[in-house]
Length: 421
Image (tube, rainbow, N blue to C red; front, side, top):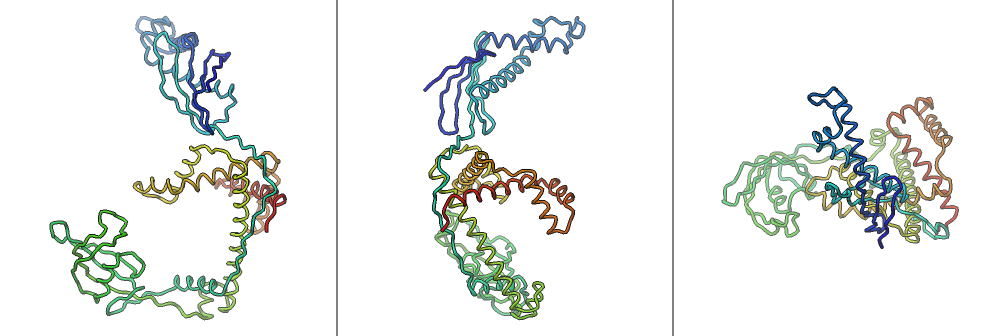
């Protein structure tokens, strides 16, 4: 469907070429009269500041200025008209712009209207006709003795001591080796040093087998077949001659699981006290995970009952943020973006739902709410609230806390109106 609209300011003509979801594609036409007026204004502005031979500053005729600075004036006219036209489109169409607009196919010929296509994303209309009456389940996680033991074993691993050993290494040992792989012409380059923990998949199985045949100081050379599931497809199933020199071997020694260990890892008098604290921490983590699951289930139910499109640019911005945070290599970014996109879309939709409910139901955090939360933080830190506020402000975290308070209000509102089993 196409719709033409005349604007009162520049008599702009707008043709809607595409209106799907959050995407708008508009064809804009600025009349010749508006162009001439803009050219005259720009030329007069130039005439007041430029110097031309034979004329005093600001006294050169506008027509001469237009001829002398034609290209510069033309560029400024285009920029100003496009900007003014865009603002009028936004005002008249009441567009809630979601991202930086893009201008395509701009045409500006002498004596003809200025035309261009404006591609813009808008915030979706999140109506949320239904937010109540959903039934979700709260996961119940029983913390077992085995889970407590696994957590304490991780602490033991962190306190482990690596001792040099003689003889052949075994799985779990840490080794330093020099590895070299023969070239296509059969030449063997110098080896490169690699630290490895055997049995953790840091080297392909064939190379680990070679390493475990050696004692420190020994070297061996043999053909090794690359696995069929090797990440580099070009190398899968190939056999290459590999030279391995085992430089040293270290074996891990875990601390004894006793009261001394408990005192070493924290302020615990006995191993039993450590186990009790670990169990409480695991239970608290399980409670938080269960609460997060309930919240996500509610948002998924609301999203399913109230479908709406999300701005692709917002999804892309979120993906870019995670690419930077995780330091994803350039050659992995496309794959990462493809795998992460559904998660990013879900996150954007979640934020829009929460924002819409907060706005509609008047649940946004107030200054008083923020002051109360800062007072709580100050009490826990045994600090002055004013100092805590200043510190959070300097770190740019006040907005984050305010958003968290708003979300707490929204989820409290939702939990009162839906069933959690």
